[in-house]
Amino acid sequence: MPVSRRVGAAALLVFVMLLFALPILGRHGAPGGFSLFNAFYQSGALVFGGGHVVLPLLQEAFVIPGFVSNDAFLAGYGAAQAVPGPLFTFAAYLGVIVKLPPHGVAGAFLALLCIFLPGILILIGVLPFWDSFGSRPAAQAVMRGVNASVVGLLGAALYTPVWTSAVKSSGDFGLVLVGFALLTLWRAPPMVVVVLSAVGGIVLGQIA
Image (tube, one colour):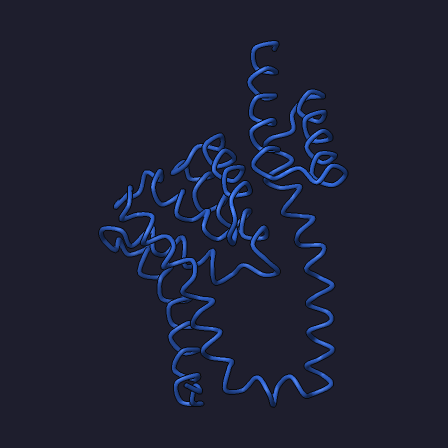
């Protein structure tokens, strides 16, 4: 069923209201799982350029305040890379282990809802206007610029937090090279690469 302009405008209004209202309410001591809702909604709303770009936002929201340890964060990221599906599902893992309530299965459901909600609202909001917007030369130029900027954003997300947090020695760098070769040259399944990298990390930990 086509989305009307009224429904689209309402979805965009809800998106903007939540984007600005949630941080304000959070500073005034909103109860329960509100802090978790706010953290995932802000991460989903501000991400730009693909799933990996959400990593710095999630790290800032959960690792820096101490809600999730950095080791647990990186372990979950590695597991998310080994299974099919969008990286946003990483939010379910964080919702389970985060120190903020409600934790567990309820936290996983809340995390997935909140991180996907901004994208759903924007999608509904722009659908009625997309044909007229996309046909304009200025809009097409904007989209080309957006696509180009995505490359830089993905590179920044690779460096921080993944590289700066996980690659701390020459042995770690060697594991990165082996994993890269397995994926690109030998086309090994991601799950195999993750398992071998995990074993390599255990071996390096015993040697160190």
